[in-house]
Image (cartoon, rainbow, N blue to C red; front, side, top):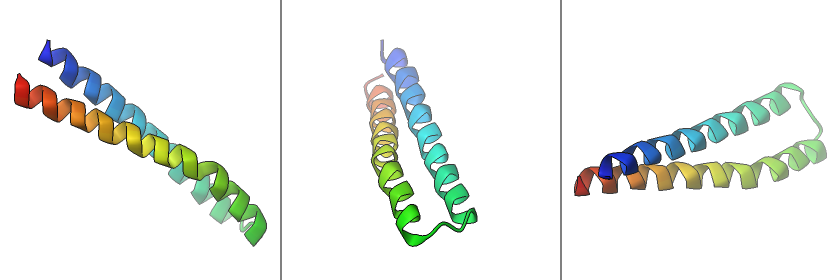
Length: 72
């Protein structure tokens, strides 16, 4: 049972990591485009909630892994 918790936590953590990488690539491409300040602000306003959500998923996944290892 705890093995499933570890694997589920690893999957959730990888999903969060993929989201973080997507956010990095999105902002990096916006910086390379040398957008105006207002346009860059709009891009960052769209990416920020996704970045926080991806970070939350990564943390929850890592917590599941740790709890699964400690209990198993």
